[in-house]
Image 1 (tube, rainbow, N blue to C red):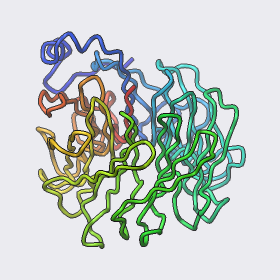
Image 2: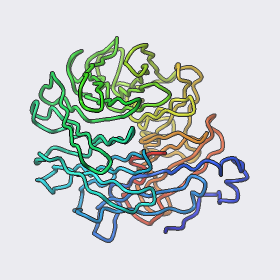
Image 3: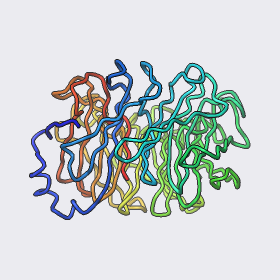
Length: 395
């Protein structure tokens, strides 16, 4: 167990600030630090598991099965069905950069490894992960079966059996199908942000039944070149949220980004942009949905210096914007690089934040739904360049 302080707020203050009602919510927060040092060596990666009712304490989990430098353990994380799923897309087990994923109990025990049955060098299996409806989905955006770097997604039972491989019926070179995945309402959602249907790297999202059948392809009504629609996905409240971090009505980069919201079947599109959108904000880099709210990360927003970052909260219909920036924001923090929401709280990662535990060691911040009541949690260990906050999941 790792003990560390809040910056200016201890656990007693936490309960005074947020109230004892918060203790009733049994939520687990998982935060990835893909360059964290561990007993296996430098820059091997780790995840930290928190009970949201006691953010002063965390459990560190590392890959015990196979790991090498820059394998990117925790590049992606997900929680569901009382399990934690962690992607390690640069693992070399089936060839250089073939990738792997690992599932754990909520306390970090019981590691089980997932490998694609046809894994090959450069596939990037584990670049995205999702868990729900008693299924696991793992993206391999550079898999080559349908097309060169066209991408694939693999679906499993929780115990690793029953592998189903899914590729797009219209796969094309460099589509990056599988860059993002989500599961909800017995459907699988797959982002393909470099698909070219509406222009170069305009992007698309595919919807499937969990057995890989029933493909539906979704593109935005105003799809345009370079938007990268499908770079991030979230599902909740019977809604699908899709990030398009490079979208720009002018039709060319640099761009501020957009987010689209759909019903579960891909209908009833709502487009969301921040009221103060600016070039290179990367609005839509990260998305989350819960508590009848949508949270959007814009890690390259420049309000407090280049790349200081911000996060936005909206109602499900795109109204009621609340903008959040860190009280101690600084250039290059990338606040908004990851986001989560649940238990009436918002969680925002700042992967390059500098603090007492090192340069770019990373941090995350907690807020009420209206953006008040900031709590900052820094990397639990002294580790330069660990990028704690790279990924985040709540469940």
